[in-house]
Image 1 (cartoon, rainbow, N blue to C red):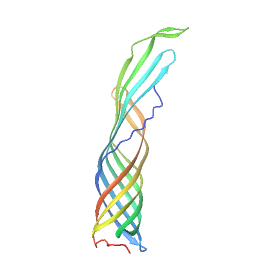
Image 2: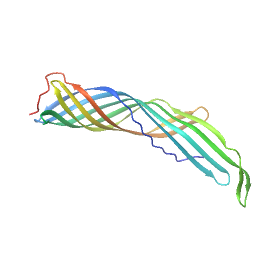
Image 3: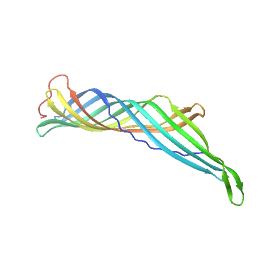
Image 4: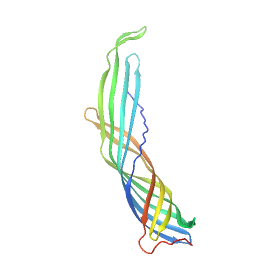
Length: 219
């Protein structure tokens, strides 16, 4: 049998979404706030791998497979703390943030085959002298869609461009920990596998502030 298989997979994707929130400036240059954002994506990772294990005096088993994970929705609910200042005569905000993260996994999958090669003629003095032809068994394990909660931290900067309009750039790290998923194949039944997911996200966007126009400069 084949055991102790561990694989890492990475993926990149474009996200499209929006955010809502509120900010309060206090103590001259300090700003606190809270926001909720959500985005649609098609974060798809695919990783091929092989593994094998010998069976002493009997033969061997070889595995070749491809694992896939697809996520469609990412969202966060965070608080932030920022420092407001003038940078090249532009009102700017530099901030850190942290809070809860959410992700929807649309699908998990592992498909491939095992090739079992057994000894046909065994001689105790020299070992196996001839092998049977490999016996191939295909499998296609799938796990259902699921939602996961985790945590996020990030940092960013925001610049006033005109009255109520501002632009921002931000980096976020999200971690959804380890969880056990049930993978089912029509012929092989159900197996439990551990899945670990983390995301690094770069954001750029435009914000509109309701209410009084943003100051051209922070005091």
